[in-house]
Length: 279
Ligand SMILES: C[S@@+](CC[C@H](N)C(=O)[O-])C[C@H]1O[C@@H](n2cnc3c(N)ncnc32)[C@H](O)[C@@H]1O
Image 1 (cartoon, protein in one colour):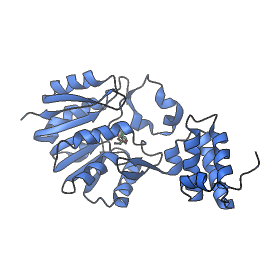
Image 2 (cartoon, protein in one colour):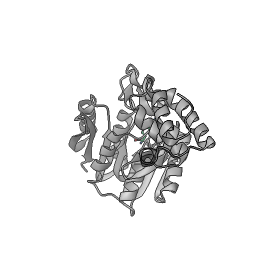
Image 3 (cartoon, rainbow, N blue to C red):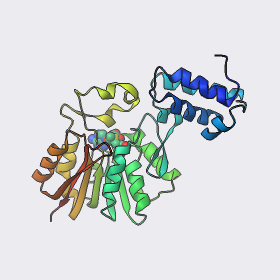
Image 4 (cartoon, rainbow, N blue to C red):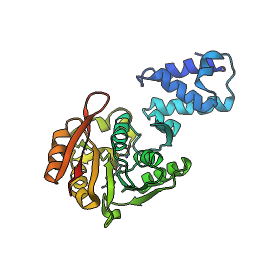
Protein backbone atom coordinates (compact mmCIF):
# COMPACT_ATOMS: atom_id res chain seq x y z
CA UNK A 1 0.00 0.00 0.00
CA UNK A 2 1.26 3.52 -0.85
CA UNK A 3 1.83 5.84 2.09
CA UNK A 4 -1.52 7.33 3.05
CA UNK A 5 -2.33 10.94 2.26
CA UNK A 6 -5.98 10.97 3.37
CA UNK A 7 -7.75 10.12 6.62
CA UNK A 8 -9.50 7.15 5.03
CA UNK A 9 -6.24 5.70 3.68
CA UNK A 10 -4.50 6.30 7.00
CA UNK A 11 -7.22 4.45 8.86
CA UNK A 12 -6.96 1.50 6.50
CA UNK A 13 -3.15 1.53 6.66
CA UNK A 14 -3.25 1.46 10.48
CA UNK A 15 -5.65 -1.49 10.55
CA UNK A 16 -3.32 -3.43 8.24
CA UNK A 17 -0.29 -2.57 10.42
CA UNK A 18 -1.97 -3.77 13.62
CA UNK A 19 -3.91 -6.76 12.29
CA UNK A 20 -1.25 -9.30 13.19
CA UNK A 21 -0.51 -7.98 16.67
CA UNK A 22 -3.82 -6.69 18.04
CA UNK A 23 -7.23 -8.36 18.32
CA UNK A 24 -8.75 -4.86 18.26
CA UNK A 25 -6.80 -3.50 15.28
CA UNK A 26 -9.61 -1.34 13.84
CA UNK A 27 -10.53 0.51 16.99
CA UNK A 28 -6.86 0.79 18.02
CA UNK A 29 -5.94 2.36 14.66
CA UNK A 30 -8.87 4.78 14.93
CA UNK A 31 -7.89 5.93 18.43
CA UNK A 32 -4.26 6.41 17.37
CA UNK A 33 -5.27 8.31 14.22
CA UNK A 34 -7.60 10.47 16.29
CA UNK A 35 -4.70 11.40 18.58
CA UNK A 36 -2.21 11.98 15.74
CA UNK A 37 -4.56 13.96 13.47
CA UNK A 38 -6.60 15.80 16.08
CA UNK A 39 -9.68 14.81 14.04
CA UNK A 40 -12.67 13.03 15.63
CA UNK A 41 -13.04 9.37 14.68
CA UNK A 42 -16.41 9.93 13.01
CA UNK A 43 -14.65 12.07 10.39
CA UNK A 44 -12.54 9.12 9.19
CA UNK A 45 -15.75 7.69 7.75
CA UNK A 46 -17.70 10.87 6.96
CA UNK A 47 -14.73 12.62 5.24
CA UNK A 48 -12.26 9.87 4.27
CA UNK A 49 -10.90 12.12 1.49
CA UNK A 50 -9.67 14.78 3.97
CA UNK A 51 -5.91 15.12 3.78
CA UNK A 52 -3.52 14.19 6.56
CA UNK A 53 -0.67 16.61 7.27
CA UNK A 54 2.94 15.40 7.15
CA UNK A 55 3.38 15.96 10.90
CA UNK A 56 0.16 14.07 11.68
CA UNK A 57 1.31 11.21 9.49
CA UNK A 58 4.67 11.03 11.30
CA UNK A 59 2.98 11.09 14.70
CA UNK A 60 0.56 8.37 13.56
CA UNK A 61 3.32 6.14 12.27
CA UNK A 62 5.22 6.46 15.56
CA UNK A 63 2.07 5.52 17.53
CA UNK A 64 1.37 2.54 15.23
CA UNK A 65 4.91 1.24 15.84
CA UNK A 66 4.41 1.45 19.61
CA UNK A 67 1.07 -0.37 19.43
CA UNK A 68 2.44 -3.00 17.04
CA UNK A 69 5.17 -3.76 19.62
CA UNK A 70 2.40 -4.55 22.14
CA UNK A 71 2.25 -1.30 24.10
CA UNK A 72 -1.32 -0.78 25.37
CA UNK A 73 -3.43 1.81 23.55
CA UNK A 74 -3.97 3.68 26.82
CA UNK A 75 -0.21 4.25 27.21
CA UNK A 76 0.10 5.26 23.52
CA UNK A 77 -2.70 7.79 23.99
CA UNK A 78 -1.59 8.76 27.51
CA UNK A 79 -5.16 8.50 28.76
CA UNK A 80 -8.00 6.15 29.69
CA UNK A 81 -11.68 6.74 30.42
CA UNK A 82 -12.92 5.57 33.82
CA UNK A 83 -16.45 6.00 35.19
CA UNK A 84 -17.50 9.43 33.81
CA UNK A 85 -14.05 11.04 33.53
CA UNK A 86 -10.71 10.68 31.72
CA UNK A 87 -7.43 9.94 33.47
CA UNK A 88 -3.87 10.57 32.37
CA UNK A 89 -2.01 7.26 32.45
CA UNK A 90 1.66 6.35 32.01
CA UNK A 91 3.63 3.12 32.43
CA UNK A 92 4.05 4.16 36.10
CA UNK A 93 0.43 3.18 36.78
CA UNK A 94 -1.94 0.30 36.17
CA UNK A 95 -4.43 1.08 33.41
CA UNK A 96 -7.76 1.34 35.27
CA UNK A 97 -9.97 -1.70 34.60
CA UNK A 98 -13.76 -1.94 34.17
CA UNK A 99 -13.80 -4.38 37.13
CA UNK A 100 -12.62 -1.57 39.37
CA UNK A 101 -15.72 0.45 38.48
CA UNK A 102 -17.57 -2.18 40.56
CA UNK A 103 -15.43 -1.27 43.55
CA UNK A 104 -16.65 2.31 43.12
CA UNK A 105 -20.32 1.41 42.64
CA UNK A 106 -20.12 -0.83 45.73
CA UNK A 107 -18.41 1.84 47.83
CA UNK A 108 -20.98 4.45 46.76
CA UNK A 109 -23.56 2.59 48.88
CA UNK A 110 -21.67 3.74 52.00
CA UNK A 111 -21.62 7.57 52.04
CA UNK A 112 -18.56 8.53 54.06
CA UNK A 113 -16.69 11.60 55.26
CA UNK A 114 -13.25 10.10 55.80
CA UNK A 115 -12.04 7.70 53.14
CA UNK A 116 -8.79 5.83 52.57
CA UNK A 117 -7.80 4.44 49.14
CA UNK A 118 -4.90 1.99 49.45
CA UNK A 119 -2.76 1.44 46.32
CA UNK A 120 -4.18 4.42 44.48
CA UNK A 121 -2.15 4.05 41.25
CA UNK A 122 -3.63 6.51 38.73
CA UNK A 123 -5.90 7.79 41.51
CA UNK A 124 -8.98 6.39 39.76
CA UNK A 125 -10.73 5.10 42.91
CA UNK A 126 -9.88 8.07 45.15
CA UNK A 127 -10.91 10.56 42.44
CA UNK A 128 -14.19 8.79 41.64
CA UNK A 129 -15.20 8.79 45.32
CA UNK A 130 -14.00 12.35 45.88
CA UNK A 131 -16.06 13.54 42.90
CA UNK A 132 -19.12 11.71 44.21
CA UNK A 133 -18.72 13.11 47.74
CA UNK A 134 -17.34 16.67 47.57
CA UNK A 135 -17.58 17.05 51.35
CA UNK A 136 -15.41 13.99 52.06
CA UNK A 137 -11.71 13.99 52.92
CA UNK A 138 -9.89 11.30 50.97
CA UNK A 139 -6.40 9.97 51.75
CA UNK A 140 -4.76 8.07 48.87
CA UNK A 141 -1.69 5.91 49.53
CA UNK A 142 0.76 4.26 47.17
CA UNK A 143 4.31 3.03 47.65
CA UNK A 144 5.28 4.26 44.18
CA UNK A 145 6.33 7.92 43.97
CA UNK A 146 5.84 7.95 40.18
CA UNK A 147 2.31 6.54 40.52
CA UNK A 148 1.48 9.17 43.13
CA UNK A 149 2.75 11.94 40.82
CA UNK A 150 0.39 10.66 38.12
CA UNK A 151 -2.53 10.44 40.58
CA UNK A 152 -1.86 13.96 41.82
CA UNK A 153 -1.77 15.26 38.24
CA UNK A 154 -5.13 13.58 37.58
CA UNK A 155 -6.70 15.11 40.68
CA UNK A 156 -5.45 18.56 39.64
CA UNK A 157 -6.62 18.16 36.04
CA UNK A 158 -10.06 17.12 37.24
CA UNK A 159 -10.24 19.93 39.80
CA UNK A 160 -10.50 17.58 42.78
CA UNK A 161 -8.81 19.27 45.72
CA UNK A 162 -9.89 17.18 48.71
CA UNK A 163 -7.51 14.25 48.27
CA UNK A 164 -4.25 13.99 50.22
CA UNK A 165 -1.67 11.77 48.53
CA UNK A 166 0.73 9.89 50.78
CA UNK A 167 3.66 7.64 49.91
CA UNK A 168 4.41 4.45 51.81
CA UNK A 169 3.61 0.83 52.62
CA UNK A 170 -0.18 0.39 53.04
CA UNK A 171 -1.17 1.92 56.43
CA UNK A 172 2.30 3.25 57.35
CA UNK A 173 1.67 6.81 56.05
CA UNK A 174 -1.72 7.05 57.82
CA UNK A 175 -0.70 5.67 61.20
CA UNK A 176 -3.08 6.91 63.92
CA UNK A 177 -5.80 7.94 61.42
CA UNK A 178 -9.25 6.35 61.27
CA UNK A 179 -11.73 6.25 58.40
CA UNK A 180 -15.40 5.56 57.69
CA UNK A 181 -14.51 3.68 54.52
CA UNK A 182 -11.34 1.93 53.32
CA UNK A 183 -11.16 0.83 49.67
CA UNK A 184 -8.37 -0.99 47.89
CA UNK A 185 -7.56 -2.59 44.57
CA UNK A 186 -4.24 -4.14 45.60
CA UNK A 187 -1.96 -6.37 43.51
CA UNK A 188 -3.53 -9.84 43.63
CA UNK A 189 -1.84 -11.96 40.96
CA UNK A 190 0.26 -14.89 42.21
CA UNK A 191 3.84 -15.38 41.04
CA UNK A 192 2.93 -18.58 39.19
CA UNK A 193 0.21 -16.95 37.08
CA UNK A 194 1.51 -16.13 33.59
CA UNK A 195 -0.69 -13.30 32.33
CA UNK A 196 1.30 -10.30 33.66
CA UNK A 197 4.09 -11.50 31.36
CA UNK A 198 1.78 -11.73 28.34
CA UNK A 199 0.10 -9.27 25.97
CA UNK A 200 -0.51 -5.67 26.96
CA UNK A 201 0.08 -6.42 30.69
CA UNK A 202 3.83 -6.80 29.99
CA UNK A 203 4.00 -3.00 29.86
CA UNK A 204 2.28 -2.40 33.21
CA UNK A 205 4.18 -2.03 36.51
CA UNK A 206 5.01 -5.39 38.14
CA UNK A 207 4.39 -3.90 41.58
CA UNK A 208 0.80 -3.11 40.60
CA UNK A 209 0.02 -6.64 39.40
CA UNK A 210 2.01 -9.29 41.28
CA UNK A 211 1.41 -9.83 44.99
CA UNK A 212 3.71 -12.79 45.77
CA UNK A 213 3.68 -16.59 45.87
CA UNK A 214 -0.06 -17.02 46.64
CA UNK A 215 -1.54 -13.75 45.31
CA UNK A 216 -2.91 -12.85 48.77
CA UNK A 217 0.25 -11.16 50.07
CA UNK A 218 -1.14 -7.61 49.66
CA UNK A 219 -4.74 -8.41 50.61
CA UNK A 220 -3.74 -9.95 53.96
CA UNK A 221 -1.99 -6.89 55.49
CA UNK A 222 -4.80 -4.64 54.22
CA UNK A 223 -7.44 -6.77 55.99
CA UNK A 224 -5.28 -7.24 59.10
CA UNK A 225 -4.71 -3.50 59.49
CA UNK A 226 -8.23 -2.36 58.66
CA UNK A 227 -9.92 -2.72 62.06
CA UNK A 228 -7.43 -0.38 63.71
CA UNK A 229 -7.90 2.21 60.92
CA UNK A 230 -11.71 2.16 60.77
CA UNK A 231 -14.18 4.02 62.93
CA UNK A 232 -16.75 1.74 64.63
CA UNK A 233 -19.21 0.54 61.96
CA UNK A 234 -16.80 1.61 59.20
CA UNK A 235 -16.51 -0.44 56.00
CA UNK A 236 -13.67 -2.12 54.10
CA UNK A 237 -14.15 -3.06 50.41
CA UNK A 238 -11.50 -4.79 48.31
CA UNK A 239 -11.09 -5.89 44.71
CA UNK A 240 -9.57 -9.36 44.35
CA UNK A 241 -8.97 -12.18 41.88
CA UNK A 242 -12.01 -14.20 40.85
CA UNK A 243 -10.74 -17.32 42.65
CA UNK A 244 -9.83 -15.47 45.86
CA UNK A 245 -13.29 -14.56 47.16
CA UNK A 246 -13.59 -17.38 49.72
CA UNK A 247 -10.10 -16.74 51.07
CA UNK A 248 -10.87 -13.02 51.36
CA UNK A 249 -14.19 -13.69 53.15
CA UNK A 250 -12.39 -16.06 55.54
CA UNK A 251 -9.73 -13.45 56.32
CA UNK A 252 -12.40 -10.78 56.86
CA UNK A 253 -14.22 -13.07 59.31
CA UNK A 254 -11.00 -13.91 61.16
CA UNK A 255 -10.22 -10.19 61.43
CA UNK A 256 -13.61 -9.62 63.12
CA UNK A 257 -15.64 -8.10 60.26
CA UNK A 258 -19.40 -8.57 60.05
CA UNK A 259 -21.91 -8.19 57.19
CA UNK A 260 -19.32 -9.81 54.93
CA UNK A 261 -20.41 -9.91 51.29
CA UNK A 262 -19.07 -10.41 47.77
CA UNK A 263 -20.20 -8.72 44.56
CA UNK A 264 -19.74 -10.02 41.02
CA UNK A 265 -18.21 -8.21 38.04
CA UNK A 266 -19.88 -7.98 34.62
CA UNK A 267 -18.32 -11.30 33.62
CA UNK A 268 -20.10 -12.93 36.58
CA UNK A 269 -16.89 -13.42 38.61
CA UNK A 270 -16.72 -12.85 42.35
CA UNK A 271 -14.64 -9.66 42.33
CA UNK A 272 -15.36 -7.28 45.22
CA UNK A 273 -15.57 -8.37 48.87
CA UNK A 274 -15.89 -6.45 52.07
CA UNK A 275 -17.36 -6.13 55.50
CA UNK A 276 -18.14 -3.82 58.40
CA UNK A 277 -16.22 -3.18 61.58
CA UNK A 278 -18.59 -4.34 64.26
CA UNK A 279 -17.71 -2.11 67.19
C1 LIG B 1 -3.67 -3.09 41.15
S1 LIG B 1 -2.90 -1.51 41.28
C2 LIG B 1 -4.34 -0.50 41.55
C3 LIG B 1 -4.21 0.90 41.07
C4 LIG B 1 -5.54 1.69 41.10
N1 LIG B 1 -6.08 1.77 42.43
C5 LIG B 1 -6.55 1.03 40.18
O1 LIG B 1 -7.52 0.46 40.68
O2 LIG B 1 -6.37 1.05 38.95
C6 LIG B 1 -2.17 -1.64 42.88
C7 LIG B 1 -1.43 -0.42 43.38
O3 LIG B 1 -0.93 -0.73 44.67
C8 LIG B 1 0.36 -0.16 44.83
N2 LIG B 1 1.08 -0.92 45.87
C9 LIG B 1 1.65 -2.15 45.77
N3 LIG B 1 2.19 -2.52 46.93
C10 LIG B 1 1.97 -1.50 47.80
C11 LIG B 1 2.28 -1.29 49.17
N4 LIG B 1 2.95 -2.22 49.88
N5 LIG B 1 1.88 -0.14 49.77
C12 LIG B 1 1.21 0.80 49.06
N6 LIG B 1 0.88 0.66 47.74
C13 LIG B 1 1.26 -0.48 47.12
C14 LIG B 1 0.99 -0.27 43.45
O4 LIG B 1 2.05 0.65 43.29
C15 LIG B 1 -0.22 0.01 42.55
O5 LIG B 1 -0.31 1.38 42.22
